[in-house]
Each structure stands twice: as C-alpha cells, then as structure tokens.
Length: 343
Ligand code: MG
Image (tube, rainbow, N blue to C red; front, top):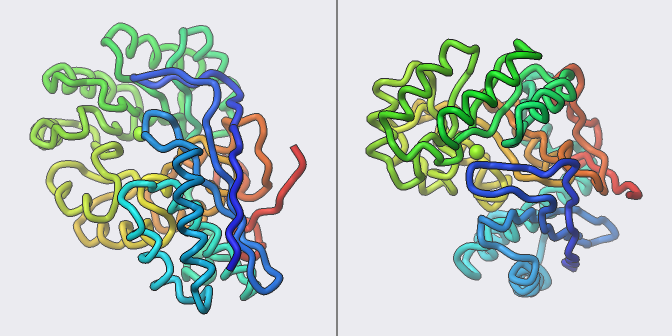
C-alpha cells in the first residue's frame, strides 16, 4: 500500500468562536491510500487547541506509510491499525486519517458502502444539529435564520451568565427549534453551572455538553445528580480507555473520529458506552466531507449527531454525506461514499 499526504487549510465560512478562542481557518491534512488500482481517502483535521499540527502529522504519516508499505493485505486492519497506533502516543487526527482511508479502500474494493459492512440501516441515520459559535446577538440572529433547514441548533456558550443568556435569547427571538448547548468547559463554578442549566431547561434545550473543566469529574457527578438536563462529556473523553470512568459522572459521551483515532475505535466506543448505559453523541471538528462522511457511516448507531463540520467550511474538496430535511443522508456509494470535487 502507498500512503500519500498533503496539507490543506480549511477556510471557515464565518469566524468561529468557542469559550476559549476564535478562528477563521483550520489546518488539515488529506491522505490517499493506494493499492491494487484503488484509492481510499482520509483526512486529519487539527484545530490548534488540540495540539496537533500539519508538520507533526506529516512526520507521523511518513512512519505510518512504512507500516502500510510492509502490510501484506489491506483487509488485515486489526493488525495494521493497532500497529500504526503503537508507533507513538497522541497523533489521534493523523491516525484517524489512515483509519478512514483504509476503511474507504476496503469499501471501494468490495464495492459496498461502509454502512453495509458495519451492518447498520442508513434510514436510521439521525438529524444533525447545526452549530452557531459565540458572537454578538445580531450575528447570532442572522446565523439562526441561516440555520432554518436544520431541526436542532447547537450553540457555543461558556462565558459569563449575561453573555450566555444573550446568546440563547438571540436564538429564541427568531427560532423555537430545540437547542443543544456546548459550554466547552467554560463553567468552572459548579453552583453557577447548575443555575445556568436550570435556566436553560425552561428554554427547550435538549442537553448540555461539557459544562465543567475536563478533569473535574467530581464536579460533573455533583452537577449530574442535580441537573434537570442530560450532561454529555466531550473534552473529558478522548478514546475508548476514557469511557468506563464516565459512568455515573456524565449521561453520555461525544465521540469524534479526530479524538479517538478513527472509525475502528469509534465503533468500539459506541458499543462500550451502550453497555455502560451511556448515551452516545457523534461529533466532528471543522472537516471536509471526507471525515464527516466517514463519521456519518456510524450515525445510525447513535442518539444525537453533530456532523455539520463540512457545512462550516468554504472550500470542501469532496462531496459526500448530505443533509436532507435536517437528517443525515448517506450516499449509495462504496466506502465512505465520497467523490473528490474541484474547489
Ligand atoms: Mg463539544
């Protein structure tokens, strides 16, 4: 197998603000895995606050390429992907890029959509939320109007009470659709977090993602015992190994391919979370339709999806998963179901 990779800068449609920062682009790396005349596609998206860089990914992918060059058979993914994982700690997004490309290659080789190989019904794919970042109320109203095709709006909070309430009130002034809230660890004081969640509960909010800092599991458990809304861990869960400790602490987990090294581990996380009675959300970074369409293959297995990453960028170089009447719609194409498209 031959692995090729190149950096690609994702240009965001609008500046995107979360509790800790605002940005206008996201560095990414695109990969191609070629063998036997078939090419599988993959992607690493690397928002800077997660600590991976295109240079670091390139160095890691060169090492992964050596493993892939030596592999006897691309179908041996239970040998290949653990071997690549073992090359170095971290590099979750770069590992995800290889994982996605390998799954895409296998699906293309078998001429089957990956969702068929996973044994899931694409008709059961959930609706996806559409994310509105932190911004001034008039901008939030405009973004909410733009989000009218979506049946759930996800909003980034995690500042002071006044600013957070203004965001919700701006949305509610123009829309009554259900809202999901992501505080991105922004409510460090648990008493204040509880007051905010109680206020949100009266405003058709479905759940709150990562209200408190990721390491504050005691505060999360305290909050969960009192919260009128389900609490979902995002920053507190990266990989499979993190899932069991969240039982009794959070109501559910947000799985992202770029955190957990790809489809192979994400699928296992869904199974383990379910066995522990945890709800499952499937999320993404800002990504092209490559990584988003890969994640979407798993979406019939989850409770909530936030797979809007490709909708937030201006230079999506693939077509793939679409959103029809708010619902994730998987293309009837082999592998992860994408086609390169000119930008
Ligand atoms: Mg989140």
